[in-house]
Image (tube, rainbow, N blue to C red; front, side, top):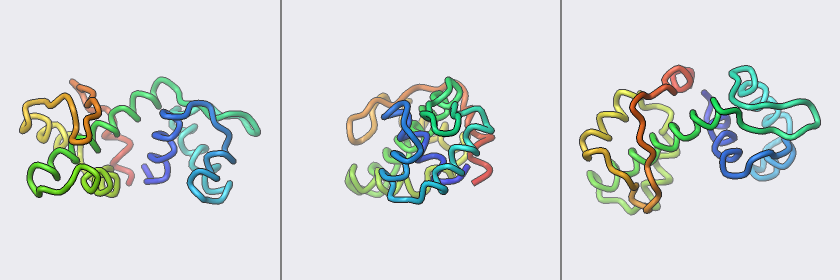
Length: 140
């Protein structure tokens, strides 16, 4: 999964049913760049989209987005606890390399910190018995 695809998923999770042009403006990117991302996500059944219509997450897309957020939050926890950086810095850094870590590694971080329920910024960390996003993050 490309970084832009992950960002589009997270944006749609927070702001459901958006037009491609609105997403492009939000990120300051070309319409064609976001359009290509949406097509990739649609091919994986992560979003529903018809040309000139709204883009929305599928259930599969919502589940993956939650899992990707969990990855980032657990990385934030690791960075704060082990390196002593602020929650804000940890959030920025975790977004940069979130897709590089395997589900197995993320689950080990979760175990190391006794399955935490909140990340350093106070947001709830969703629990996950299985990490099903592995097939998407490997492509990055």
